[in-house]
Image 1 (tube, rainbow, N blue to C red):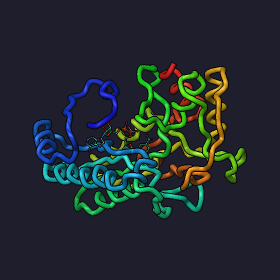
Image 2: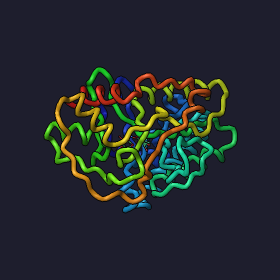
Image 3: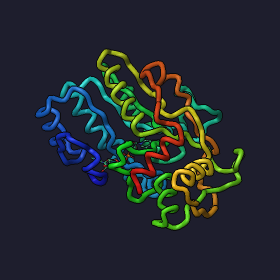
Length: 285
Ligand SMILES: NC(=O)c1ccc[n+]([C@@H]2O[C@H](COP(=O)([O-])OP(=O)(O)OC[C@H]3O[C@@H](n4cnc5c(N)ncnc54)[C@H](O)[C@@H]3O)[C@@H](O)[C@H]2O)c1
């Protein structure tokens, strides 16, 4: 582990180490008689991946493949991987289904796709590559808020800007071909994502091969709509500054969630924008 919050783990046995450390991974799998792996670890910042592609290949592909090989050697047969909508790049249509062309436009997306391909090559392995869209929200008890270093996600940045803890929120372009000119994304609540991982593990252990599965809400919201929801929840304005578009930001990214509904009984009860924003605000006050 190189970043992240220990407090977010709850009551689990924690072994600190690197997924590329074959000996540690082997010992851990053996000692704890691991039968399934859920692989969240990775480098997650798109902009950083553009600056340091080799670093992303090293962690997200090479070291992750050490984990995968050790897991297979230890007899693990189910593997759930945190993939990303970044594998699609700039999609030609919306909503995006898993059969859409995968043409990542960042090294981050490329590493996610490369690891999916490694999973697909492994004979006898039951696997799921859960392609998250925009993970957002927080546990409804408010005890833990989203935190990344550096923070790049819209909701924490918007809430902090409204509370005066950060400068004005930068909107990356307001001249996109969308109703209000800002980019449309599909926000999915972390509690719903967690439930999908449990369903995926159940499906894999009963012998169902899953492969790639989109996890989104199936609905799109523009940056300005999200900011409006934050303002309503906090009853104060979010200061904003419109800046240039970011390279490679598609106007709209919304998931087709048919496959998740069919294979994982995906209902995403908490992924409406008001609930996501309310939970995120509660955790950050
Ligand atoms: N947050 C999102 O919106 C989102 C969207 C799509 C996909 N994902 C994927 O979900 C996963 C979790 O994302 P997150 O938002 O919780 O990110 P995060 O940065 O909070 O968590 C990733 C964790 O992986 C650890 N890690 C990185 N390299 C490691 C290595 N070599 N060995 C051991 N640990 C290592 C980091 O220390 C960190 O604790 C990531 O794989 C990410 O790519 C996240």
